[in-house]
Image (cartoon, rainbow, N blue to C red; front, side, top):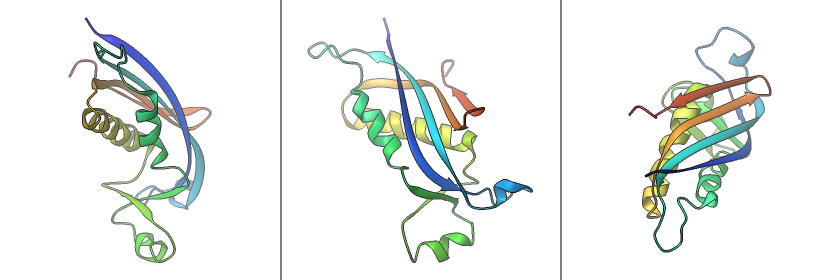
Length: 137
């Protein structure tokens, strides 16, 4: 038997899409919304599947950060002034969804929770999100 949980979290961050031909090529910011669905085995003693703060801590790694493709020439310049979160590829909502899902699953394992992300949505605006589903994996 699996138990399921859901957590919603937010972060503010800037990004740009290096390989995009349009407005999103420029550095710009969003209030990102992250919705996470998880499943797994509840701990026999605590009756907790995952501490919701575990999910929030992972999402907060991106709060008030600049997120750029590791190949973006802006990385070198901006790194002189602040930390830059670098991704393997352009930091689209699609890439961010898969990245955050993996980080949450890894952190849960590190904290001893037997759970996995089954679905994640990453919204970069009130009308646009990317969704990754791991239900069939």
